[in-house]
Image (cartoon, rainbow, N blue to C red; front, side, top):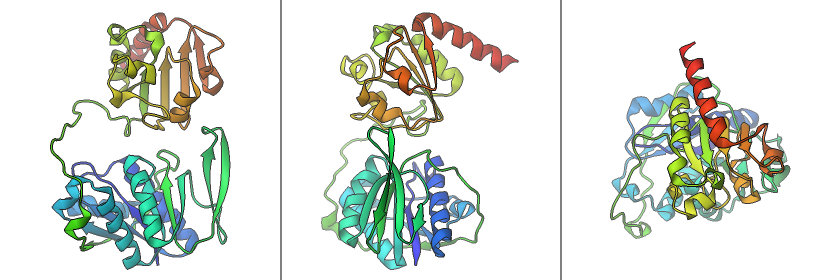
Length: 323
């Protein structure tokens, strides 16, 4: 028996999220007295695959099949379910991102397994099996018992620390034998963002709202973001107006993020926006309106004009870097 964790890779490399998930899987496996198996789909070098052993993966199943490059959720779910059956997995862990949220329900149905999305840590108990997640737009916690023999969990990024737990790792080439008919997605063109910190990976995020008044005023935010090595984000009205790309839209209808630090400038803090960013470790808000809802969610707040505060922050960061 094992805990199976589906580890996504980006151009053959694992990122922080994958190591968080393996660390979580290792902690759960220790609670249950079983092992950890990581499933990797795509062309990943052996050294990179074995790096998962640093965080507790006893075995890595390596699927190298070019058909999966289409990222067809139906085929991916079939591969995860077959790997889980092969390993006798009692817990299957996927990321709580677009791919994980698309795959997990399919895997749950295939394995007749209970599903909980957005889990934020190890189970509170394993007998009965009880996990915790955030609910009511991240403002409360729910403890959920899964009564099925197999459990599928999607893991909320940045909610479990990476923990080193070196074990001997066996890498096994695995062919889940997925029929061609399972692949129904065709990729006609690919556009990749380069030279920017991706929101899904960013430890720090700098975000602007309608209070920035127009796209021509984003220079200061971009400079601050570059100094901090931060990802750039925006509220929905900003992307709807075409001031910034929809790739930067965070919130319930955009990307759900959980950076260590979220800096919000000129964002009022509508509930839909806070639903996508409230998992941030620290929220700093800058707004002229002292009654702006975002101050209720912020750890630190500055009541002031963003156009005056941003240059001061830029100078402070520069001084800090040269000190």
